[in-house]
Image (cartoon, rainbow, N blue to C red; front, side, top):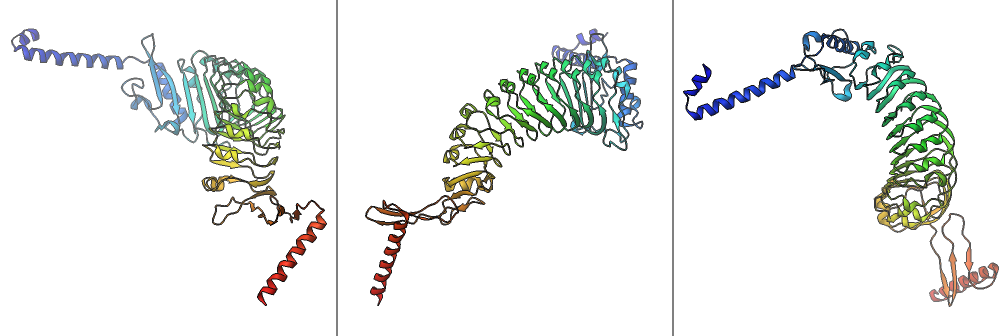
Length: 477
């Protein structure tokens, strides 16, 4: 009947009506696709998981009858699999994701979550806040249920998440990102983490972890980021870390690591950040830094490393932007080759035992914005220009170098904490010159280049002064 009715319409109207029917048909097909079924059992599981984190006040069966379709839950993602059903693939809770569903003050880690067999991403931020009032522990068992699905596990800013890292977490064979950042976790680093052959990001910073770094972590051949800073790790750095060829970032700062810097770390040619500051490492720089030519940030401060700066080809570090070697027991002079690092923005050599003079060539670094050499044994006079002092301001730190001075000029910018050099005093007569020494703050003596002893030189200067005074007296009176 509809076809017969359409046949009596003008052809223009027939075309328009066909177009409308086509659009409506496509819309209906889209609606049918979005309403693909989700198993009731999986609905019940995700509702129970959310209640475990948010609280029993949340009743998703009424608010979100189709959590993977027309009424999605914020923080929950789904995908359709070959079985024709939608399955939960990601659960994210916490303010970092701007979710309106926040964890309740008595949140717990629900065991039901292990029944989400297709879960690939689990992220919980600021869910467990009190280690005393409502501490929560990571489940010890059931992690093997995620062995073929979970790719990313992030537990961040949960000071109330206490206990050890479960050994069973090593069964997550597909894991690519493990972030356990700023929680209350204790105990040692599980060697089972070395089984994550696909792992690209390992962040364990800001916990209370103890013990040594397992040597088998060198098997993580695809690892890009390793951050275990701000813990209580001890022992030596395993030489196997030099096998992490893909590593871009290594941060082990603020621990209690000791022993010598392994020279194997120098093999990490792709490394852009190395921060092992605030430990007890020693052994000098030359053996370790030779091949780290991709570095942008090198922070070794507050370690008794020792050695000097002369054995390193600084001209090879053309990517480096920040270099912090403060308080590392360095000796010797500051080499002029450090002025070849054209991208250097921050250089800190403070609180060492460096001696000699400071070359003006450092002024030629085009990107330099901070230079700290305070607390050393540098001597001589600073030759930097007025423009350099004005540009750096307080970011140029050279105080606490007893024999360092600068040339004072009227109305010029003065480097903070540095005394002016003693100015030259020259008396010339023929080829004879009297000159007062400069470059230190001790009482300088008169040097006379008369070819005789210092005693006769002093007598000669005294005689000249008497003759001049008598001449001026006669002229006036």
